Image (cartoon, rainbow, N blue to C red; front, side, top):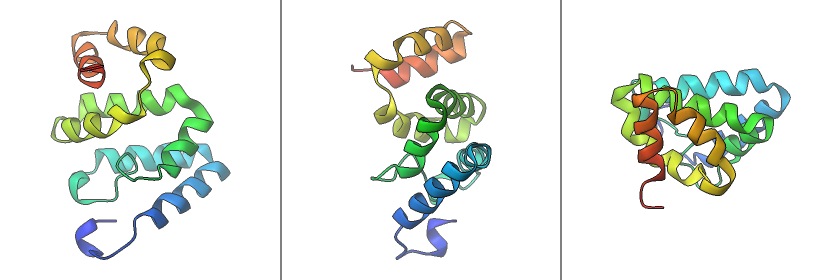
Length: 124
């Protein structure tokens, strides 16, 4: 699903299909999210955090809100090459008010986790 392979493709179709399949099988949806965010071609591939409609992300959040956040945040920790883009795109999915307890708990897990939370909440 590299963007370069299909330069004129409408990625909202990928987003819709992934959302539909996630609603059928949550585990496969989380597996797809993990695969996409860990991809060495992350910046050139379809990105569910970047898509305007966010249907796939919404399906993951609907299935398990905190698991979706934790999955993306942990990948940002462990994939330094993709960290900036993941946190940049995840920023809009975080609600300080709604996610406050989760963010505090995650930040207390260690210095690296605290840094990710700081990046996600900067300027708010």
